[in-house]
Length: 323
Image: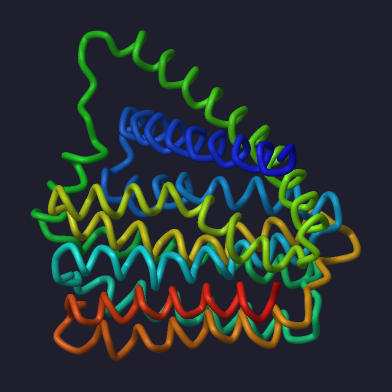
């Protein structure tokens, strides 16, 4: 009960902290003159991934590499199968051209790269530098692509993230800075509580850190992406919803896991089942998204149902075969 309580408390702190970081960071970026589209594709994508970063760093610090990598693999499976599928079930999902031509190939390349780097059962600091370099390259390409976005897309992002400043600018800046600091504190504390609770729970249940990372921790740290995508779908801001979802999946691998790999001097040791089963599955799902996304540039309700069904089947496999 104590382990479960710490895990739940950690997840709650991560979710609240990520929301504070995302919203306060977005408003501050808008005040600095950063285009709303850039805010949506970078600040928000990174903000919703802060739980994964905090969990990864804390897991690396206590030599729980499988928990860190399992969290990333599990989170991306939640993003692509569960959250994307639910969004399409609510309403068939029309995809923006940038998603098909840019985000989809980069997401697939990120999954393939991670699987290849982890195939020897370890992620080293050198691997971390490769991933962080790819994150910087991706961000530069995002900035380049924003120059070619339509006025409609720019207006949509401006309405969501580019609130114009008013006469109370100084007071609001101070408020946003305070909220940003509170969000960072909440995420850091939440990561410590969650990792401690997850490791204790794994020992008590007799399962591996990888399984805990792939299930409870992955679903919990995906909550910001779930909320962002579902709310964006209900508001019909579909480009924001899917852009942030795929952007978060890319940053999870390149930026979040890349930085995590830089923490331990001896690298991250990874559970063999994670290397041979879960990472290849994550890559396979990214590859499956290619024909689904390209065919008519939409995800139908049927395809959404198949995605959700696929995640349900995977969860059943983890419970029956890995616990």
